[in-house]
Image (cartoon, rainbow, N blue to C red):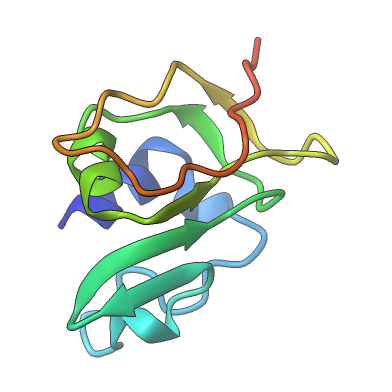
Length: 102
């Protein structure tokens, strides 16, 4: 699962809100910060949610399926290194920026 790679790479167990992430019985529509269509992730809104780590290469595939991606951190809660990998296909809209952590 591509979303699981993001969860593991950015310290998902320590996220501020991780409701239903990686729950095999939960529909992805119930995961915090995720929008889905027909069981596929189409939106990620995880801004200011305590993500910390390096963006995984798998994110490129996930971004290719996603219409919105928001990982920005106005409050400094997200400390992410690396640039989002190029998507398999372009996003319709990529929102936010990735703060470069130290």
